[in-house]
Length: 284
Image 1: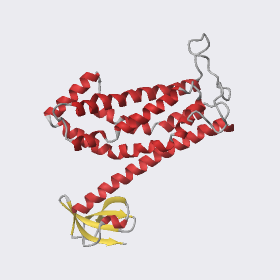
Image 2: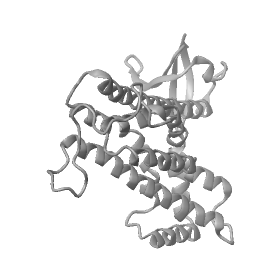
Image 3: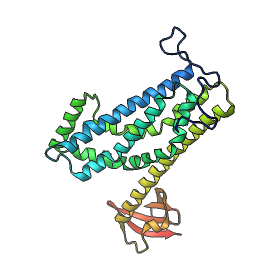
Image 4: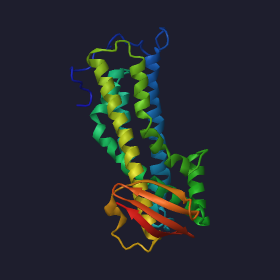
Protein backbone atom coordinates (compact mmCIF):
# COMPACT_ATOMS: atom_id res chain seq x y z
CA UNK A 1 0.00 0.00 0.00
CA UNK A 2 1.75 3.15 -1.22
CA UNK A 3 -0.41 5.34 1.00
CA UNK A 4 0.84 3.86 4.26
CA UNK A 5 3.51 5.18 6.60
CA UNK A 6 5.29 3.63 9.55
CA UNK A 7 2.76 5.46 11.71
CA UNK A 8 -0.38 4.28 9.90
CA UNK A 9 -2.80 6.07 7.55
CA UNK A 10 -2.77 9.73 6.49
CA UNK A 11 -4.49 12.22 8.81
CA UNK A 12 -6.02 15.24 7.12
CA UNK A 13 -3.17 17.50 8.25
CA UNK A 14 0.29 16.70 9.56
CA UNK A 15 2.55 18.62 11.88
CA UNK A 16 0.52 21.82 11.54
CA UNK A 17 0.64 21.83 7.73
CA UNK A 18 -3.09 21.98 7.04
CA UNK A 19 -3.85 23.67 3.73
CA UNK A 20 -7.03 25.52 2.87
CA UNK A 21 -9.16 23.70 0.28
CA UNK A 22 -8.68 24.94 -3.26
CA UNK A 23 -11.24 27.52 -4.27
CA UNK A 24 -11.80 28.65 -0.66
CA UNK A 25 -11.53 32.33 0.25
CA UNK A 26 -8.64 31.53 2.60
CA UNK A 27 -5.10 32.73 2.00
CA UNK A 28 -2.92 31.14 -0.65
CA UNK A 29 -1.15 27.85 0.26
CA UNK A 30 1.88 28.12 2.51
CA UNK A 31 5.35 27.99 0.98
CA UNK A 32 5.48 24.29 1.88
CA UNK A 33 2.15 23.78 0.12
CA UNK A 34 3.56 25.46 -2.99
CA UNK A 35 6.64 23.20 -2.88
CA UNK A 36 4.39 20.12 -2.79
CA UNK A 37 2.33 21.56 -5.64
CA UNK A 38 5.52 22.17 -7.65
CA UNK A 39 6.57 18.51 -7.24
CA UNK A 40 3.18 17.28 -8.47
CA UNK A 41 2.85 19.82 -11.30
CA UNK A 42 6.40 19.27 -12.55
CA UNK A 43 5.85 15.48 -12.54
CA UNK A 44 2.66 16.01 -14.54
CA UNK A 45 4.56 18.07 -17.13
CA UNK A 46 7.38 15.51 -17.18
CA UNK A 47 4.98 12.58 -17.70
CA UNK A 48 3.32 14.50 -20.53
CA UNK A 49 6.71 15.10 -22.17
CA UNK A 50 7.57 11.40 -21.87
CA UNK A 51 4.23 10.46 -23.40
CA UNK A 52 4.96 12.72 -26.37
CA UNK A 53 8.26 10.87 -26.95
CA UNK A 54 6.69 7.41 -26.63
CA UNK A 55 3.57 8.11 -28.70
CA UNK A 56 4.60 11.04 -30.88
CA UNK A 57 8.03 9.75 -31.96
CA UNK A 58 8.62 6.09 -31.03
CA UNK A 59 5.04 5.06 -31.81
CA UNK A 60 5.11 6.81 -35.19
CA UNK A 61 8.39 5.09 -36.09
CA UNK A 62 7.00 1.66 -35.16
CA UNK A 63 3.70 2.25 -37.02
CA UNK A 64 5.30 3.63 -40.20
CA UNK A 65 4.50 1.54 -43.30
CA UNK A 66 8.07 1.85 -44.55
CA UNK A 67 10.93 1.41 -42.04
CA UNK A 68 12.23 4.87 -41.15
CA UNK A 69 15.03 3.91 -38.75
CA UNK A 70 16.96 0.67 -38.39
CA UNK A 71 16.09 -1.38 -35.26
CA UNK A 72 19.51 -0.70 -33.71
CA UNK A 73 19.00 3.04 -34.28
CA UNK A 74 15.63 2.92 -32.52
CA UNK A 75 17.14 1.01 -29.59
CA UNK A 76 20.05 3.43 -29.23
CA UNK A 77 17.89 6.52 -29.69
CA UNK A 78 15.15 5.76 -27.17
CA UNK A 79 16.77 3.29 -24.74
CA UNK A 80 14.24 2.19 -22.12
CA UNK A 81 12.13 5.36 -22.40
CA UNK A 82 8.90 3.30 -22.25
CA UNK A 83 9.88 1.96 -18.79
CA UNK A 84 10.69 5.50 -17.65
CA UNK A 85 7.30 6.73 -18.88
CA UNK A 86 5.48 3.89 -17.10
CA UNK A 87 7.24 4.68 -13.80
CA UNK A 88 6.56 8.42 -14.10
CA UNK A 89 2.87 7.81 -14.88
CA UNK A 90 2.48 5.57 -11.82
CA UNK A 91 4.41 7.99 -9.60
CA UNK A 92 2.19 10.84 -10.82
CA UNK A 93 -0.96 8.91 -9.87
CA UNK A 94 0.49 8.36 -6.38
CA UNK A 95 1.47 12.02 -6.02
CA UNK A 96 -1.95 13.24 -7.18
CA UNK A 97 -3.60 11.17 -4.44
CA UNK A 98 -1.52 12.84 -1.71
CA UNK A 99 -3.91 15.79 -1.21
CA UNK A 100 -1.00 18.24 -0.77
CA UNK A 101 0.34 16.24 2.19
CA UNK A 102 4.17 16.63 2.17
CA UNK A 103 4.71 13.42 4.14
CA UNK A 104 2.53 11.42 1.76
CA UNK A 105 4.60 12.84 -1.11
CA UNK A 106 7.81 11.74 0.64
CA UNK A 107 6.43 8.21 1.12
CA UNK A 108 5.76 7.94 -2.64
CA UNK A 109 9.51 8.15 -3.23
CA UNK A 110 10.51 5.85 -0.35
CA UNK A 111 8.14 3.05 -1.43
CA UNK A 112 9.33 3.21 -5.06
CA UNK A 113 13.04 3.59 -4.30
CA UNK A 114 14.09 0.35 -6.03
CA UNK A 115 12.17 1.19 -9.21
CA UNK A 116 14.26 4.29 -9.93
CA UNK A 117 17.18 1.97 -10.79
CA UNK A 118 15.82 1.85 -14.37
CA UNK A 119 17.22 5.36 -14.82
CA UNK A 120 20.74 3.93 -14.65
CA UNK A 121 20.19 2.10 -17.93
CA UNK A 122 18.72 5.21 -19.56
CA UNK A 123 21.53 7.51 -18.38
CA UNK A 124 24.24 5.02 -19.43
CA UNK A 125 22.64 4.79 -22.87
CA UNK A 126 22.24 8.56 -23.22
CA UNK A 127 25.58 9.18 -25.05
CA UNK A 128 24.54 6.49 -27.56
CA UNK A 129 21.20 8.27 -27.90
CA UNK A 130 22.93 11.56 -28.74
CA UNK A 131 25.13 9.79 -31.31
CA UNK A 132 22.13 7.99 -32.87
CA UNK A 133 20.20 11.26 -33.15
CA UNK A 134 23.18 12.96 -34.82
CA UNK A 135 23.30 10.08 -37.32
CA UNK A 136 19.57 10.46 -38.03
CA UNK A 137 19.95 14.19 -38.65
CA UNK A 138 22.58 13.46 -41.32
CA UNK A 139 19.97 11.45 -43.24
CA UNK A 140 17.54 13.71 -45.12
CA UNK A 141 14.68 11.19 -44.91
CA UNK A 142 15.14 10.48 -41.20
CA UNK A 143 15.63 14.16 -40.32
CA UNK A 144 12.47 15.07 -42.25
CA UNK A 145 10.47 12.34 -40.48
CA UNK A 146 11.59 13.55 -37.03
CA UNK A 147 10.80 17.17 -37.93
CA UNK A 148 7.31 16.11 -39.06
CA UNK A 149 6.80 14.35 -35.70
CA UNK A 150 7.89 17.53 -33.92
CA UNK A 151 5.47 19.65 -35.97
CA UNK A 152 2.56 17.26 -35.27
CA UNK A 153 3.30 17.53 -31.55
CA UNK A 154 3.63 21.33 -31.84
CA UNK A 155 6.86 21.18 -29.91
CA UNK A 156 9.04 24.28 -29.98
CA UNK A 157 12.08 22.13 -29.14
CA UNK A 158 13.40 19.15 -31.16
CA UNK A 159 13.54 15.50 -30.02
CA UNK A 160 17.03 15.87 -28.52
CA UNK A 161 15.78 18.33 -25.90
CA UNK A 162 13.10 15.84 -24.81
CA UNK A 163 15.45 12.85 -24.66
CA UNK A 164 17.58 14.80 -22.16
CA UNK A 165 14.67 15.32 -19.75
CA UNK A 166 14.91 11.95 -17.88
CA UNK A 167 18.62 12.59 -17.19
CA UNK A 168 17.74 16.00 -15.75
CA UNK A 169 14.67 14.83 -13.84
CA UNK A 170 16.22 11.94 -11.90
CA UNK A 171 18.95 14.26 -10.60
CA UNK A 172 16.38 16.84 -9.42
CA UNK A 173 14.06 14.79 -7.19
CA UNK A 174 16.27 15.00 -4.09
CA UNK A 175 16.54 18.78 -4.51
CA UNK A 176 12.75 19.14 -4.61
CA UNK A 177 12.42 16.97 -1.50
CA UNK A 178 15.08 19.05 0.28
CA UNK A 179 12.77 22.05 -0.17
CA UNK A 180 10.08 20.16 1.76
CA UNK A 181 12.48 19.49 4.64
CA UNK A 182 13.74 23.08 4.63
CA UNK A 183 10.25 24.49 5.20
CA UNK A 184 8.88 21.70 7.41
CA UNK A 185 7.51 23.29 10.58
CA UNK A 186 8.42 20.61 13.13
CA UNK A 187 11.92 19.31 12.43
CA UNK A 188 11.50 16.24 14.63
CA UNK A 189 9.19 13.28 14.97
CA UNK A 190 8.13 10.49 12.63
CA UNK A 191 6.80 12.75 9.88
CA UNK A 192 10.07 14.63 9.52
CA UNK A 193 12.00 11.34 9.58
CA UNK A 194 9.95 10.10 6.61
CA UNK A 195 10.85 13.26 4.67
CA UNK A 196 14.54 12.80 5.51
CA UNK A 197 14.34 9.15 4.42
CA UNK A 198 12.91 10.26 1.06
CA UNK A 199 15.76 12.76 0.63
CA UNK A 200 18.35 10.09 1.51
CA UNK A 201 16.70 7.65 -0.90
CA UNK A 202 16.69 9.99 -3.89
CA UNK A 203 20.14 11.41 -3.07
CA UNK A 204 21.48 7.84 -3.13
CA UNK A 205 19.71 7.22 -6.45
CA UNK A 206 21.28 10.38 -7.93
CA UNK A 207 24.71 9.48 -6.54
CA UNK A 208 24.47 5.89 -7.79
CA UNK A 209 23.42 6.99 -11.29
CA UNK A 210 26.23 9.53 -11.48
CA UNK A 211 28.70 6.89 -10.27
CA UNK A 212 27.46 4.27 -12.76
CA UNK A 213 27.56 6.88 -15.53
CA UNK A 214 31.16 7.73 -14.62
CA UNK A 215 32.18 4.05 -14.52
CA UNK A 216 30.44 3.42 -17.83
CA UNK A 217 32.27 6.34 -19.45
CA UNK A 218 35.59 5.17 -18.00
CA UNK A 219 35.00 1.62 -19.26
CA UNK A 220 34.36 2.93 -22.78
CA UNK A 221 37.50 5.08 -22.56
CA UNK A 222 39.45 2.04 -21.32
CA UNK A 223 38.37 0.04 -24.38
CA UNK A 224 39.34 2.97 -26.59
CA UNK A 225 42.84 3.16 -25.04
CA UNK A 226 43.26 -0.60 -25.50
CA UNK A 227 42.35 -0.33 -29.20
CA UNK A 228 44.83 2.53 -29.75
CA UNK A 229 47.72 1.01 -27.77
CA UNK A 230 50.74 -0.16 -29.81
CA UNK A 231 53.53 -2.44 -28.57
CA UNK A 232 51.67 -3.63 -25.48
CA UNK A 233 52.32 -7.31 -24.68
CA UNK A 234 50.54 -7.45 -21.34
CA UNK A 235 47.02 -8.63 -20.49
CA UNK A 236 43.80 -6.82 -21.33
CA UNK A 237 43.76 -3.43 -19.58
CA UNK A 238 40.51 -4.32 -17.81
CA UNK A 239 42.54 -6.73 -15.65
CA UNK A 240 44.16 -3.66 -14.04
CA UNK A 241 40.86 -2.38 -12.71
CA UNK A 242 39.10 0.89 -13.35
CA UNK A 243 40.69 3.85 -15.16
CA UNK A 244 41.18 6.45 -12.42
CA UNK A 245 43.05 9.30 -14.13
CA UNK A 246 44.77 10.18 -17.37
CA UNK A 247 47.05 13.03 -18.32
CA UNK A 248 50.39 14.07 -19.80
CA UNK A 249 53.79 14.99 -18.43
CA UNK A 250 57.06 16.10 -20.00
CA UNK A 251 60.33 14.23 -19.43
CA UNK A 252 62.80 17.05 -18.72
CA UNK A 253 66.04 15.40 -19.86
CA UNK A 254 64.82 14.43 -23.32
CA UNK A 255 61.93 16.91 -23.52
CA UNK A 256 59.50 14.22 -24.61
CA UNK A 257 55.85 14.35 -23.64
CA UNK A 258 54.30 11.18 -22.25
CA UNK A 259 50.64 10.23 -21.99
CA UNK A 260 49.95 8.40 -18.74
CA UNK A 261 46.97 6.34 -17.61
CA UNK A 262 46.45 5.49 -13.95
CA UNK A 263 44.43 2.32 -13.32
CA UNK A 264 43.56 0.78 -9.95
CA UNK A 265 46.53 -1.61 -10.20
CA UNK A 266 49.07 0.02 -12.50
CA UNK A 267 50.39 3.24 -14.04
CA UNK A 268 50.71 2.95 -17.83
CA UNK A 269 53.22 5.26 -19.55
CA UNK A 270 52.90 5.80 -23.31
CA UNK A 271 54.00 8.10 -26.10
CA UNK A 272 51.52 9.68 -28.50
CA UNK A 273 51.92 8.77 -32.17
CA UNK A 274 49.14 10.36 -34.19
CA UNK A 275 45.89 8.92 -32.85
CA UNK A 276 47.71 6.00 -31.20
CA UNK A 277 49.63 5.42 -27.97
CA UNK A 278 52.98 3.60 -28.08
CA UNK A 279 53.70 1.60 -24.93
CA UNK A 280 56.81 2.79 -23.05
CA UNK A 281 56.58 1.43 -19.52
CA UNK A 282 54.27 0.57 -16.70
CA UNK A 283 54.57 0.69 -12.92
CA UNK A 284 52.52 -1.89 -10.96
